[in-house]
Length: 252
Ligand code: PEP
Image (cartoon, rainbow, N blue to C red):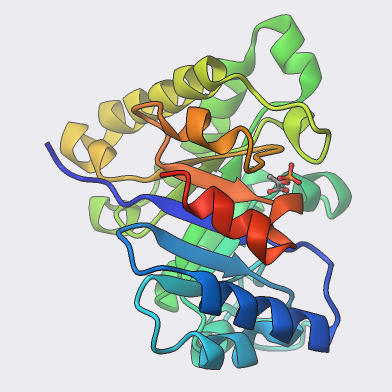
């Protein structure tokens, strides 16, 4: 059996001014124990370069951006290319977050092109998918998430897939305090992995880390992470306090 990486990634969203962000990176770096769990900090663009320099000697701590543009360079005022992120010491980029889909009109076709740009620049995408409350209530969550995964990832090669992390984030559980039950998370993660196995083969599917996201806190992380297809978490609100975030990391 192939051992998948355990990953706990923070998504700071649009929080933390420069000094507060620097202090938070330093606090996480100071408290983090060496372990097999890979820890990733997803910060606003302004922090990336300094954060990468603070964590550079800590082998299980990496930095993620929260978005990138799909083109390599050019006249796209206000945008940031994947290669620019890589040049700052960034290794990961969160793509397809439900807030990008909802407030910035990102669809799976655009997200797929951003995934391609990230991979071409040597970044690992953290691809977010997840159904809205209506779909969960209608019982169509497997179809909705399956279509997202297919549209964003099925065009990749097996080698490319090996660079991808998936985050399942039911939209009804993000920032709401309402967590999916460990069983609901496990069921969807197993569904996603089965879809990957059907397309890429079982070995490739078994190598992909699938994270759960949606109101993960120190008090519920252990139970969620105990499920066999849950390989870690994407953490929003609770990633903004070093003690809470580290407590979640230590839940493995
Ligand atoms: C997120 O937005 O990725 C997230 C999981 O947020 P929260 O933990 O605050 O629900």
